[in-house]
Amino acid sequence: RIRALFIEVSTKTGNPLVDSVSEHSPGTWADYWVNLGGACYSTVVGALVLIFSYFQMGNKSEAMLFLVLLGAACMFFSLKMSRLIILSAMPAAALTGVAGGAVWELMVSPLRHTLLGPSAL
View 1: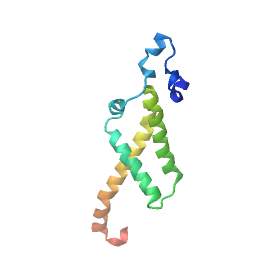
View 2: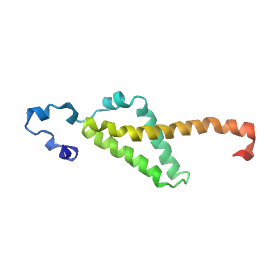
View 3: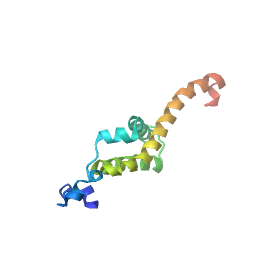
View 4: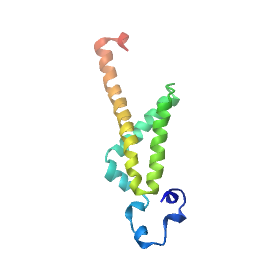
């Protein structure tokens, strides 16, 4: 099973019972939509926010890079074996939170500036 993640040839074992198990088949993008729902889109937005913040805003944090790399690694391995899509839930939830926080900050920042004045920023 582990070799199937890295070597394409080893996915067929010759045993019809093992080969017929659907959880060993490669994952598809439709599987992501079924299991993660709307988080599929907000995960990408959250990753882009973190990458932009890391390179453009000067917020150098290893946690930002770790979250983006964790999401990329989980996506890579879950596309190799469909039962590993559950591993994508953790980075998808975290990156969705990042996207939600960025949208919240965009909505609240002008309101805070209007109510409290420019010195509150």
